Length: 190
Image 1 (cartoon, rainbow, N blue to C red):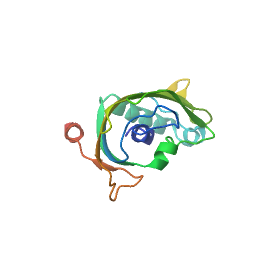
Image 2: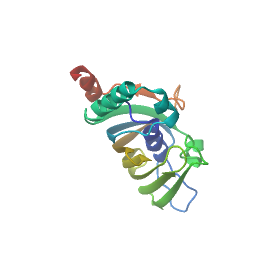
Image 3: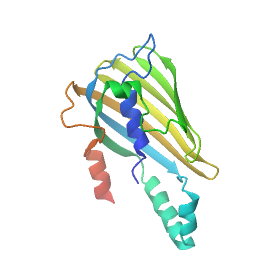
């Protein structure tokens, strides 16, 4: 089970200034390479209509598979993302604006904290801290919780990014994964 696309979206979009404020992160637009090391735990919330269609055996098998995957340890992914002015203006553009809100808590030229809150079908909340020691580098910590009650999925990620260049080439909103040696090794071990 790959961590939700929200992690990558948060990481990529937060690598650029997120609000029209006096203080903005000092980062360059263009192609970025972002490596995330993510640990996922818990059970993701599942739609009731899906669960109602499953037999008890199917549900038990699904839960066992999810538990096995989350127990396998941290996952490392490296992606390339084109950070554009549009992504700066709408940092969580893939989130449902009616159900999810984000707020920039603090911003300086070298750091930022963003909070995300989602209500409705996919309840959740998260905090993202980003540091940009130079306009061409970033690090970040992401802590997300999705769901409520007994079905809560927790995602913790450490991110590290570097600016590749101003030209995004063929890169678009669909990121192209770059196989990371740690990920390849993880798959071989299974």
